[in-house]
Image (cartoon, rainbow, N blue to C red):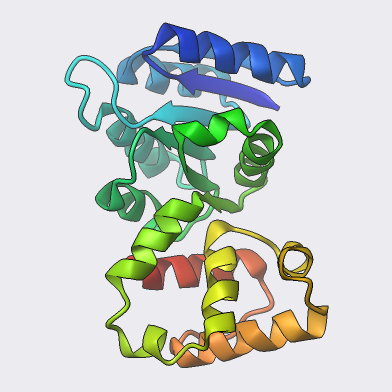
Length: 214
């Protein structure tokens, strides 16, 4: 994959460059500010961009705003956001358009190389990759909703994995369930959340994520 990195911490930025290069990917630009990010994406049109939420000069939400600006021009531009903490508003705003090709991971997930690369590849392919802790907190915010309350413990477990962006086959492997069982659970979930079933996995994931971020 051709990758753009926007991270102000030199050590982390260089570490990401080395890790991606060593695993066969091409880092076409590694920048430290939001304007540099937007310029790099416009110039290189990478397969995916890795973006820190907080970039100079304000270290508030410059990275996220740049990502939203990029996706405003090109809605399905793949963006993987990295953050030090779970920030619900940022996660919700990023995925609210339902276009897919987005991810939100905590920075400590970068050290789990296989998981990080899997998330990066999933986003580049047009899917979603949500940090389990982000999903947990989104669930916590919606525990009072009638639809969520109607889910069984297993359905909530399946929904959490769907929200992370896992495919049906990956959920089967994670929970040691037969494909038919996973399909039944997902059908029940969509019915209870008043979300129409769909054969399109990405559309289904976007619908569930959109619900969780209402």
